[in-house]
Amino acid sequence: MSGRTGFILKIYRVLLRFYPAAFRSEFSEEMQAVFARALTEGQSPGGKQLWREIRDWPGLVLQEHLRERRWEMFSNGLGEKKPLPRSELLAAMIIFVLPLLSIFATNIISLPQWTDIILVVLFWGAVLFAFGLAVIRGVPGWSLPYLGFILLLGLIMLRYDRIWGWIYPVFLRLFGARSDWPLVVRTIYVGVFSFIMLFSVLLGALIAVSLLRLLPYTRGIWQRLRADWTQLSFMLYGGLVFGIMIVFDEYHYEEFWKLASWACLALGAWRYLRAENQKQRFLSLMYGASGSMWVIALAKWVLIPFQKWPMGYPVSPSPTTRWVETGGTLIGWICILAALTAPALLNLFPGAPGAILSKEENTTTA
Image 1 (cartoon, rainbow, N blue to C red):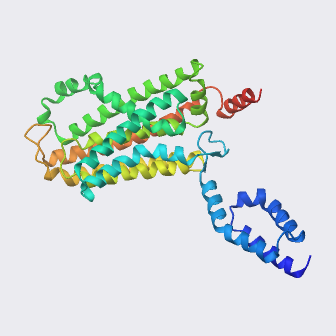
Image 2 (cartoon, rainbow, N blue to C red; image 1 turned 90 degrees about the vertical axis):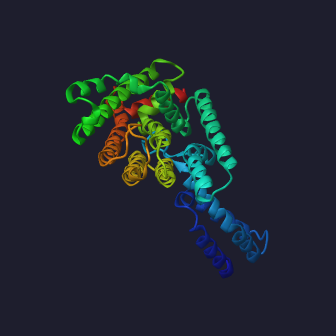
Image 3 (cartoon, helix red, strand yellow; image 1 turned 135 degrees about the vertical axis):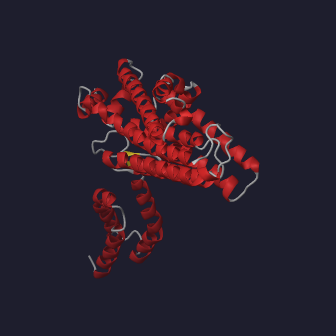
């Protein structure tokens, strides 16, 4: 091998160092061998051969880095990387991004009202389409936030508050009319109501998820949830998108706070989808939900003095209202963190996740 050929090979090795480490470990030796053979066989002048490689090098390096970044640990939480296509990543983020675009278009840059209508139609169309596709395709990972959104919407439409309506009469008998309740009693009422509601929903969800393994059509979903319980947390996380839509009901001047709260959720979802292990996925949801709820708490503290609610509907703004609304949001934050953590209880069920996956892999191989 001549000195000129060796020098060209050294340059080529330097170019290969810019590829991702996993790509280099798998293809570097083969690429060097092919390039060296092309030089020694004289298929084209060495300089011309090197120029072609340099010309194509930036695009190829960028392509490989983007491809590697799309590889995510999405379903099993056991260290196995699985590819997350760009289409699924974007599909999962639509439910978090469209509300942001709606607020930005109508309130930040003041686009015509019809643009907001188009975004609303796109949002609900995406939710309904994703829900239908999820049912047909066996609930793929990208559809989980949409299911959580539909679940919370269903609870609201069914007037879930009536199910726990017995709590209010108990407090009336103990403490008299609500207008006479001191701040401590009002805070305790919110906490008790939130805790009982959370316990009931989680108990129902646990029973529903346990029933998945009894049906052949849903047994695969059960196996996925047992392998990575954060998928169930991600589904509940999607319900927070709808929660923000209703938490500022009857509020004025709330647009910026909605935008900031949805942005926190979107960032948490993005980090979840790109996380490399189960711990990072769980923390991404916790950080996103915490940021969103703290923004809401701060928003209520700031906005309530500027509200013009009529007396008694739902409550007239007052210092007590300010404390109760803000404190209730923080109690809700604690309940949401508990709800996102509760799916970890699936690990208490018989059968280790690793055994479940191994059994599934053996069945597939057979």
